[in-house]
Length: 81
Image 1 (tube, rainbow, N blue to C red):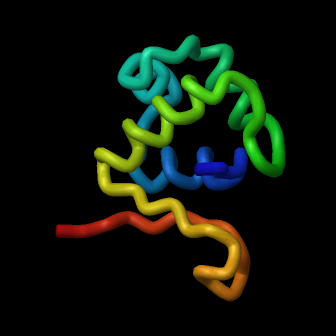
Image 2 (image 1 turned 180 degrees about the vertical axis):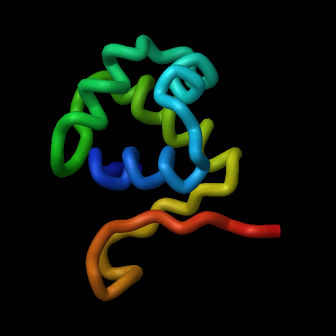
């Protein structure tokens, strides 16, 4: 799954999760996470790190929405319940 830096930042914000907590749970270096979040557009880099971040966020209830699923383009939603 390809996600954008904007989606990554929004997902973490929805969960009110600190960068350090996400990095630790995903076993990703905090500087790597900061680099991903500091960019724009589709994330590129180590695919395993990106997938690990997505896995942690998804397990916490985040749903990543692809372009076309919502009128405004890619986004995130929080599954409640």
